[in-house]
Image 1 (cartoon, rainbow, N blue to C red):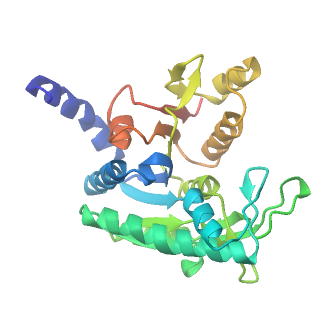
Image 2 (image 1 turned 180 degrees about the vertical axis):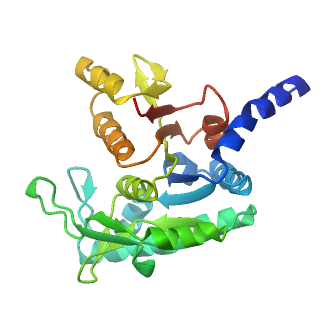
Length: 283
């Protein structure tokens, strides 16, 4: 239990952040352990409800890769990946639609609403929320995998204006009406940039960016480039960091990578001076 002095310090530390962010928009990419472990699911739902109740606009984008693979296996549909992207044929897009647009989306919405939120579930196909074109990295065929070309911000802003919390499954629609599967991280970045969000927060299963075992609390593009050149940031973290700074360049104020395995990690990152993850900021 916290003693009274500690409780007072927590509340006083949070107050200026509450005042600063009232009326702003946060886009949250929801995934990892926070989306699968029951206790963490409950604390996430409480956290986003608290943020909404104090006047912050919340947009949630979720993935669901493990669940897609599990259902595909049950249906004896083979799963394969090309450069980290799930190859998506006609059979697989049906599985993706069922899992993301159906099961998981409605579970998340119900969980938030059960905790006092006002969530509404959507896919990118609803009111042409997300338009996309086929993604072909380095000319490679990924099937029905897309990259977002347009976000219906007027639709999202209408929902936010009416105190709703959009929960978006990253399906999208092409020029001819075809449905595309979009990587949830990339969809969240596109939506945050289009809304010119105050924050884009990635809930992950890592504590943030670590260098030699120590968490880096703040990164600028200059410091990130230096750490990449030194080899301190390497492998799969390089595209994550690069993508984060591209999102900043597109109009987002801050990008955060936080550990969703920590209870109430959203509140701890946003409302404390030290935070618990890594924030990427403009120079």
